[in-house]
Image (cartoon, rainbow, N blue to C red; front, side):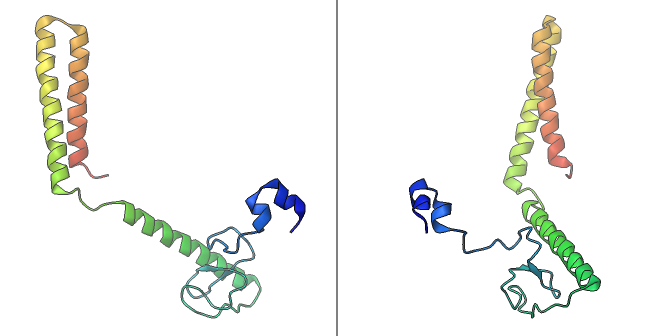
Length: 146
């Protein structure tokens, strides 16, 4: 380690490169398991996911298989992330709360709109329409699937 690295105070230059490589890096030298498609480090001899040997032949067919497994692995990760973040149903207490808020906002909007029409007030009418739309959109979001 050089004295300049110590004086610069940069921890990356002091410690050097990190020991752990990220598994999903864009390094073209990483090995792809031909059994499951998991990206492994170049120093690994067996797949970290399925323990299959990583000894692979070179050539066009091997490259095509690796490309296929990379794309399949990324698609599976994307599908897993999408299913984890999407709840199947809204819990009942949350649905009741949204329904109550939507109904109250719509009711207040209708009441304010009738009052605005009776008093010929344009500004009260705009506020009433905003309340009404917020209530309707809350109810619509509750009953429509995304």
